Image 1 (spheres, rainbow, N blue to C red):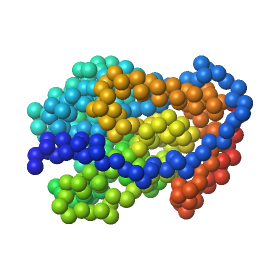
Image 2 (cartoon, one colour; image 1 turned 180 degrees about the horizontal axis):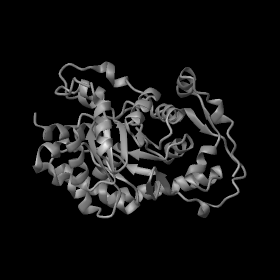
Image 3 (cartoon, rainbow, N blue to C red; image 1 turned 90 degrees about the vertical axis):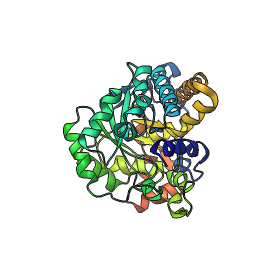
Length: 352
């Protein structure tokens, strides 16, 4: 099977393979505030992801990685959508285009459709410095995502089986990089231990890529004759991964992995996320409803975030970390077992 056909398979299966196990945010509940003391018009949804300014606490995350004309159409639509919203967009792994120049226009179309937008390049942790530089130059990227995906590779029939030296390679790329470096998981979550290693290697920003969104084990298992089903339930839920990461490193964190609603976003921001990455839900909407309808629904979501901020009495995104929230269920149990106090979240002040 060619790399192009494999990437098309990924898109097809990502649209049909939904994770039903949850991202962990259902275990969180805000403490209602009867006296918010602000108006909707006073809310400001702009956020900073490190040095990167976004018009809303949302980014459109990596989904496509070299599937010919169909990938080109999707990447172009993603870039245009993000530019219209004033938020960042990331492409999928560019290794296909680094290896095969005929694939480059399926990624460079993003900069063509979004000449002044915020675009993130994407390459695997196995990439050499020159390959990472090629990915950045291909779309004139504002930041580089390096994705970490050992479980996907292990389940993938033709996947990699060698993972030694990845941290050294990330450090080598960081040494030569002039834009922010984002280290991102692809759906199995970042633990506190992994987050520390990533930052030590040079990560400026962490993207949790938690369990609860597109399940790449299930995607790859659908391509196997003999399933490795034990990995379908593997991973750290997004809510847990976000809190573990924020508790362990002092860098901006993007919460991603099954982020589908304004409620997910508000809870992520209250737990310290700088922004939330959305991938599968956006891809599905683009394919089924088109660019204009998807943009309308994304703008509606941003308005819902404003309404939620008003209900919580918070004018700015960063103020949401002062909102008290109860964490229960399996999310609360996981955090307690990992030595993280959930009562700290419950007893935060809601003062303006």
